[in-house]
Length: 167
Image (tube, rainbow, N blue to C red; front, side):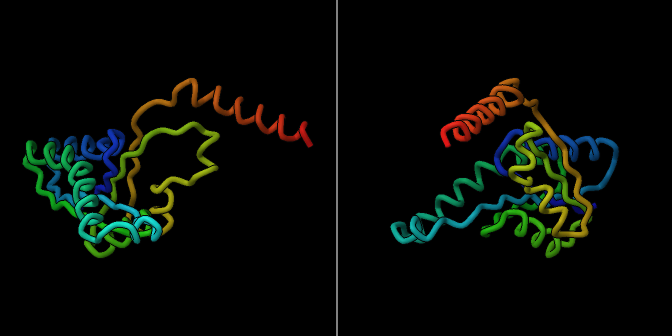
């Protein structure tokens, strides 16, 4: 089974590696493609930096994002290939790499977000599911804090009420 695992360097993304380790323990033969996608630098940043400096920064970021997963998969003797991609839309790059590599499944680990934030910014995982017919497994990790759940929405509502009252 060939699996694509997009990684962003967060601990939540490593939930996908946990899942793959469990599959390997059950005897599933895995071929893993680890992918780190970075957005392009804005042209205002690019004009003041050299291509070599930007490439070095991208390589450093990718190495940091991929290293934990690579170490764990190496320990468990799971075959993998590590890749880096760059593009304006992370979800589009993930879907394109999945199609190009002809993977059987995409496994993504994501953090939990409070319910009120989900409508504001659709997740990359949701966009990947919209862009490809390849099955996508999304694994969550972490808990939403009380501050995120109650205080931030109350603060936003308070600011909105002040703005309405000031008109």
